[in-house]
Length: 290
Image 1 (cartoon, one colour):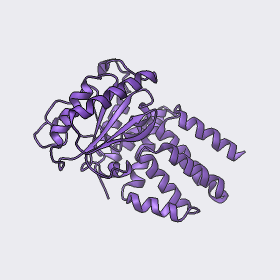
Image 2 (spheres, one colour):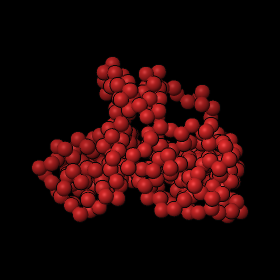
Image 3 (cartoon, rainbow, N blue to C red):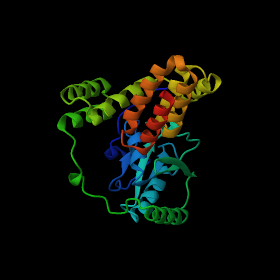
């Protein structure tokens, strides 16, 4: 199974019967792809996010997307909407274990939780979003109106170029840009993350998700199978599962420790060095090493 790596352009989604509905995207709305899924999950530590998985094939899907936008708009700055086109990004939909369309998933505190399946009414949506907004406030999450994009710290031009290449599907161009930047700025975390994300995409590009998971379950001592399953876990936003799998393999297969540790460090770069899940996994790895 293969798919485009690019982030969708919402300007193409405003026609009738298209995935994104007919209304304008909300401020801060995100189009989900392999390139940005993990960042969305990580950012959900502060921004409660509804990840909505749909398709142009869904009967009434465009109208429902518009209704979902109108309900979430009342909680601007508290609830962020992210839309995944299952036809454009089938591997991401599979990694999220989507069983039917449309499906809504809650991203909160770095966790991925099912919210609802199928088309529901606006009257059913409203109280759910009210409860989620109240929960976000109770948990001390971000509840301010979205800031203008210009207020956000800008990436260096070279990194912007690299991410643009990645989003357009030019993995070779993105890799070259990240590599060149890293040579000039050794250890720079954003460039390391970009290279790690590209490597993750390439490793999983032609892998059937279910087959990968079944191979790992059937062969717990097969390091290759466990490495691939960890990649698939991370791709689907199951960060803790990915780390736990590799830490277990590190403990149980001493002869393969160097390979497993190298993959763990690479996945740490994907998630981000300051992420709590990475910090905890590093501590566990250190205990296993010494």
